[in-house]
Length: 311
Ligand code: CP
Image (cartoon, rainbow, N blue to C red; front, top):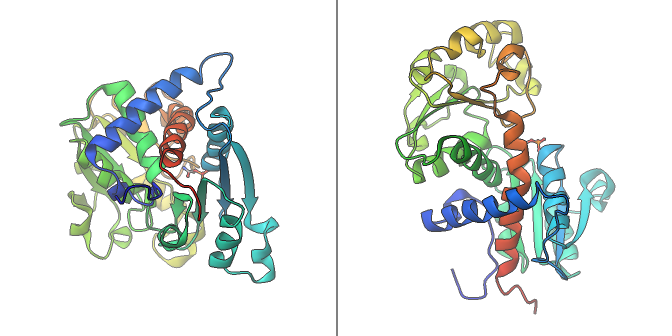
């Protein structure tokens, strides 16, 4: 990285293994802080974080806002519905306009794959990708890895099954990169209609049945079936999908005893995951949410740590 250049986080590929581990260690500190009665740290005092969300979000948006506030930053939240994009302003012009207000960090969620990359090339503030289309969701992968490490310790040699709509999942793509960087062995499972065009690019085996991925898994991560795609003939129906691809207690028995169950949310209960599994002691789904604030505090602290002084 050029000295003084903004520390963007667009893809997990922006991080070395040492940087990823440093972020996870830093998140562990913020995780403990977030469990204290007073949750504030002074790290970003005087700094400005803009959260720019062009897609719906509950977990990511709220946790980035809390993360910025717990670090004492000035945090501004902008949603597509309340921005001048509704009057036809382009994303590039919107971000150029906001950059003129001298933010230190711009957090961007957008429906277009590559949106964060495009903005990062033009932004003097550090850009953090909060999910771009079908490309990546790097802070989700970091919080997933954080949760796994809290429960399992080192990820080296651990088996992680990632199951569901792999083709459209930015969570799957970021996790594939990060988990293999941390030494885990990932096994994907998806219906053929939800395989990526080039499965080899995942860098891990993929099955067209759930069972080979579940057998002996230390972690089972179920992905959201995007209800908006149900009409596009990728799957016959939600009911049929649940029958063949849903994680039930019986199917979970194929994994290691006590295997961790994860889901990035929002869940479609009764479709990709049964109520019983989602409520079971093995489910770490709310642990993932808690980790999200701590991990995003670490990510914002890293992003603001570079010399982002504007010209
Ligand atoms: N996991 C995730 O990105 O959830 P939200 O869409 O609610 O932010």
